[in-house]
Length: 197
Image (tube, rainbow, N blue to C red):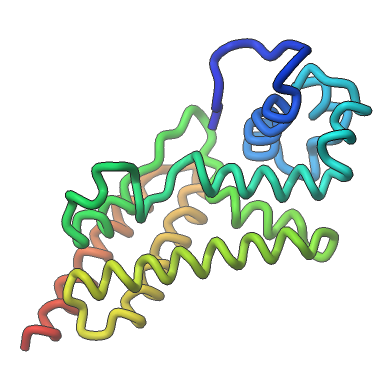
């Protein structure tokens, strides 16, 4: 989940370097395992500078999640070519195996929800909003694809997606994505077939 190729250095752009370091460290090593000192060192800033940009580690975590939601990739709206793809193709595209260099780490939003537990309630709000938005987008795509019950289909697809992400992480194996895609195809065939019957 690396977001930049050039080494980080001091000077301008400290806020973005902090976010870039958070994207790398929080995802690869975990939110709780990454202390503020390590985050500052990786971003080539002092702790004082970090706290000038973010008043707390929770504030860094919140910005990390917002940044990921906007930049890393959205399987439902995967770029400018998405509108030219059919709704079915976009649904199935969300089940393509994510690129991985080494260990599979799963969904950063799910990981944040687990790590935040009761210690960062604001993080749960961001995660919940993201997941609800994903379900809504899947429901809308299911409706566009002609599903008989798009709301039910949207929830089923979201559960398949979450299951594939969790299982591939637990097993460190991309195979669950292949099985989830096949299950999504079956669900779509059944849902669209019932709608046209």
